Image: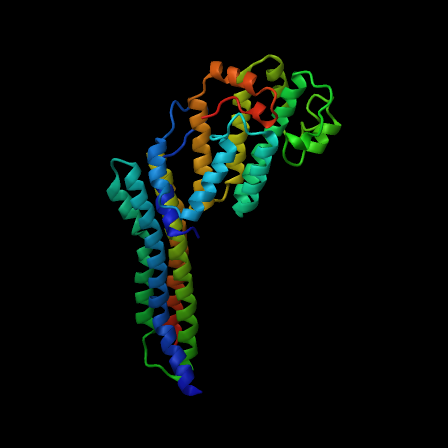
Length: 226
Length: 147
């Protein structure tokens, strides 16, 4: 049974609709933050940290991959909420895959120590199966081959669409069964972030950023940052 | 020992009201909070949200009726029957009201996004109500048979 405050909070939030059909977010960030003020300060802080890691909102170009990964591990360790940890890990693992595809596209013959710029369960496999099109991860990420093709064709928008679609589905899958609790609120906010990212997407500036970030690892998989 | 049995009998008489009231409180509070949240996000339809949130109040009414049917001169012979019928029907009413409140909250949430499913969204709450009615009716049947 959900906590009462989450019932009111969840029903006060407008329905998201579909990710790629949206022309704008269902409510403004200002309004969303006002509603989120009903959360416990601790829950709000946890959610903020996860958003920060997943959005790279405050990530500076000067922050190294090692620094970022240390921050990710710290956030996941301190979060303490199993679902939010799973969501963060899943998203960062998908980013690691895209980062690897990009690095290979840049002509890197050998991946080097993947754990220095990648995160999650697949770093060893990516390193071992560097020369396979999808690093042998096609069964986990059925869209890996298509992502590889998008990168080869320099189709930034298509790649963004693939990645956001994957993130959207993962949130739906992981959030299933949560209706009126903190996890439901977190999934709502993270989906809001995805809609916000897609509706504010600018292919031109994204391409520029990718060029700026091409030498870094996980950053490669983040065409737009807000 | 007989005094204890008689006491439990009286507890059974009052249990449907007390447990039904607790369930209705939980259910109406849950659905009511959903209605309040929905009002923040919509410009109309407030009345029907509040109406839905009152659905779990029927269980307390069932509880009152069961209490009156159990309210007979208490003896050692009929006290255990009153205790069993009262407590178990009360628990069924409590649980159904609490869960019905969640169904109502979900119905409010869903119909807010898609007003055309308003009637259909209430079906789960109505089904839960049906189970409460079963508990209520058979409590009446059994208590009528108990001397």
